[in-house]
Length: 96
Image (cartoon, rainbow, N blue to C red; front, side, top):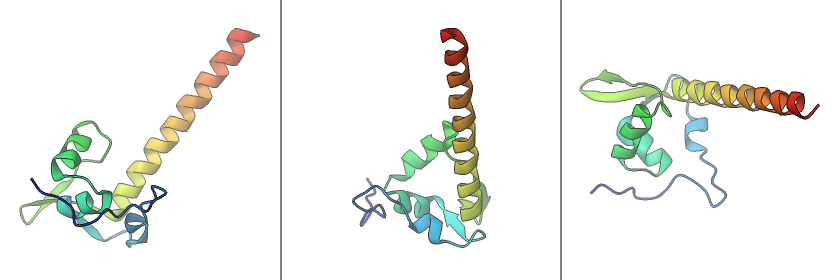
């Protein structure tokens, strides 16, 4: 089983490595696993759950750009914010 040498997450759960990369930097599946401190199988599962965007194959390896990964996360965060806002509006309407 593959293990990471060290987690790129600090004690407070902050993952800065992805944020520090230029938007057009190419990140391999193995690289993303190392950045996130996860196994490559976990990365594959996260793609299936749509927690990560679908990668493209380049030179036989699955890759993303750092910008695509950040954009996907930001889209998911915005969708979650809107969903929470709608839920709060429904609760407010029902309690009126």
